[in-house]
Image (cartoon, rainbow, N blue to C red; front, side, top):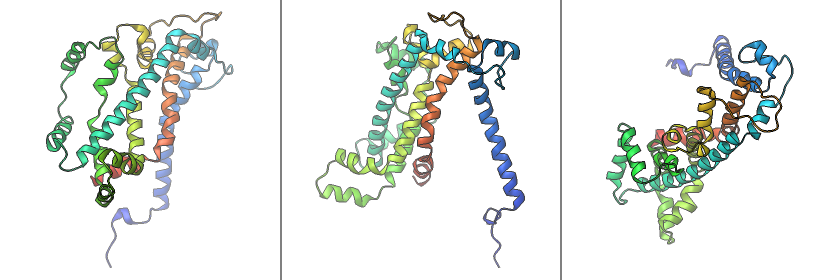
Length: 294
């Protein structure tokens, strides 16, 4: 009788219990900081002062003073709109360029196939460096321009490779039948490849959106006008460096500084938390299949 491998055996009661406890502990480690940040942002000045740090128990009730300060403050509100604009525009550009590039690289015999593919793979191990990119952006006259944030990170080699691997798994018979019917490459991409690749495109879109939303370094380098700062840079300035936040008009008492900081943090992470559950179901099909089978 052939003995099965250990991972093929039915898990024991002890093993299942240990797995459940481990999952619960990991969830607590991940969720507890988020809980403390959210509760601190909703706490009163007296509670924050008495605790002397992050609040883990709502002693004096819940107040929205910190969020009122944020949404009535022109600095944070403007930064939020800038981040939404950059994320939407940058993600759309990146997804379109990545899909076009990956589809071209997935078709053998396309123009410059081997050279371009080698260049994309080379980007995994070679990065031009900060100074050449800075000089390139400055030479194009993009200083103090939102394009300086979008263009340097418009294409990710990893995302292109994942898309290409997924596209190569689409049966060749579909392409041949479409060409027999007179379809061109763009029509094939739009009507055949894209509908079959919704999972991987959704995952790549999430990757790009999160990268643009959290990117503060390019804004720090290229945006001299503080009025053009995205939310991530405002978050760094007021939370990490503890710079004073201008007081919003109409408030008689400013919320506690720590509550204001945590409110900015919550505003920054909420969009990703909301979007992720809708895309999470595509991760296995979109990334794992595309990366392994390619």
